[in-house]
Image (cartoon, rainbow, N blue to C red; front, side, top):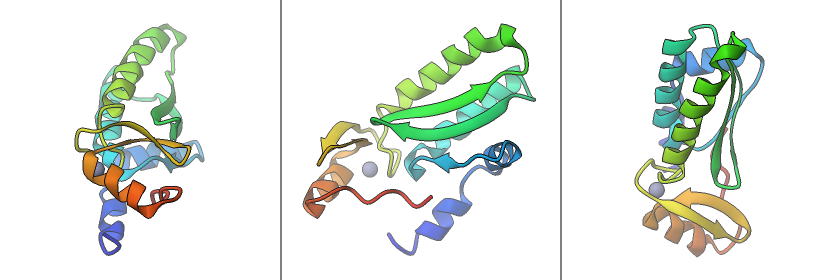
Length: 132
Ligand SMILES: [Zn+2]
C-alpha cells in the first residue's frame, strides 16, 4: 500500500492537475475518485474547454467539484453534470474506486467499500487521510 502511493499520485489525470494549477488551487480527494474526476473534467471540457476549476474536495463524504463555466448560460448544465458525478462518487470507495457506501468512522464520513471500511474500523481511530 505504502509503495503504491507514488504511482497512484502519478496516475492523477494530468489535464485536471494542469487546470487546477492554472487557478492556483489543489486537489483534495482520495485516489478512488480520480477516474470519476477525470471523466467529469472531460464532460465539462467538451461543453466548455475554457472552464475554470477551483477546488476538488471531499466534504462529509461527498465529492465537491467547484467549477465555473466561461459563460453563465452554461451554469445549469455544469450543475447537472457535476451533480451526477457527485452522485456516482457517493457510491464508490474513495480509496480504491470499488462500489462502496457512505460510512461514519469515528466522526469522519467517507465512502468506503467493505474492505476499506473494515480497515478504517480496525485502525480504531480517525481514518488516515489520503496523500495529497
Ligand atoms: Zn475500497
